[in-house]
Image (cartoon, rainbow, N blue to C red; front, side, top):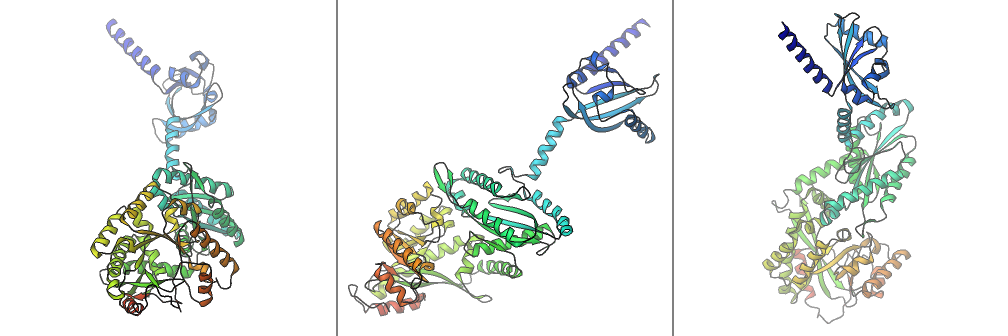
Length: 575
């Protein structure tokens, strides 16, 4: 008998040690008064009280959210449900007054007199912190700290009822950064990520506290403008956003430029769901891209039709090469002073059985956005070189051919090899190939880009800067990069004979380029007055409908046959 008592005492002591070492808080509480009768070491550690001090307190002192009435109600509900224990969550108060979350479980022991309750409390701080972290990750962009697409669309949906009640509108802006991909691909994702963070900071600087800026992926953002009464309010905010990101971003002692294209839709005018508004704002954003980027456009039903046409064009364009629907036209480039033919620009044309003749201004952006620009660009390069290599047979001398090269072709990494292949296959001397690039490519200022330029120069190929004046037109580009020719964009030529501002700009561009020993080409010449102005300013080369429209390969050879009659050193009338 004595041995059994010893064993029982040993087991009781072991159980006591286990309960004392248990990390959870354990209390024995008087069911009638809620006074603490006993507690374990876990309670003392979490609360900051000694075991003796806890014996002077009641459960209400430890857990302020519970009094005797609440406590008995919980006990009674557990008894009615025939539950062994009842659990709920609340906050414990430490000795220093701070609170921490706990999950409390109650187990009534009626065999004791007076009846007692076994209370266990689990500190939920770590779990709550983890849950909060998961909620943050589910609702916020980890890179910029902005809300993500899920949270943004949730907030949009929540704003709908308020708009209906107050007779206001919600504006949803879909924003895409122009030229970001060039920067990201050439300077690396680390630089791209830093740029996105800086863009997000600028958004927060100009938006109101009631607005929401969210990143939905890549370089795409959503901005919610609630409680809109007047359209002008949204226009002002859109202008603020565009103006905010226009100044250069300084990263690693390098100035980077990005612009924004923004599409805007409204609830309830353009849709009654967040996803519909997003889709329509995306459509409007694409329209902003086609309007020259760095602007905002409001959604319209006509844009929906344009989006459908965009998909149709992409579908047909994917099969255009195989179906032999593409051809290259050549627009002559003539010496301004002598009128002698110096070369031609290769221009892609597309005639589809369903769509008919599709404008390059319409299908080239589709090709760029869909990735089709790579196979199309490589095909144009090869065909243009093949055709230019035949011209001496007709004209009796070689001409240079200018070929547009897109940013994706440079970023693809295989451009130099493609140029080598085109030259070798066509036997065209490299000095007669001119690759036209745009300012957006130069904006990244990548060391890789300079390396590519140098490899092309080593081949003997010339580089031309196309559409000069439509971007940032930084003089540093002309100084740093090995540009042979500068092409003044036709938007400056169009009103040249009547607009003094255009005249001043063209005069300045020509003087600057010649000062750097860079050749100047004016494109889009359509009248005698324009031509005369360009001749007086000593522009080197001109092209445009006044001189000749773009010609098919066969028609261009006929044109060359006529030019064969003109001696190279002769001076001829251009028109």
